Length: 68
Image 1 (cartoon, rainbow, N blue to C red):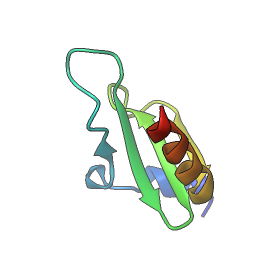
Image 2 (spheres, helix red, strand yellow):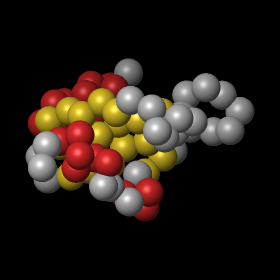
Image 3 (tube, helix red, strand yellow):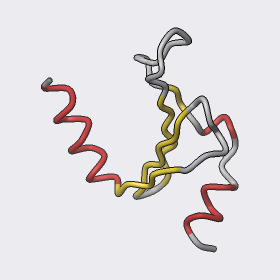
């Protein structure tokens, strides 16, 4: 099974919305963690494109963003 097919089988309950997301703005992000990979999507368009990032790359991004 390829990565695209695997992401398509994730249940909605696997997706977690960012605590910074609100209904008032356009900054709505959801993530779903799988072994070795983190998937990111726009919560307003759950059938839209999904960005898949290696877990180490996601951890580095979160660490960098937390410093801002």
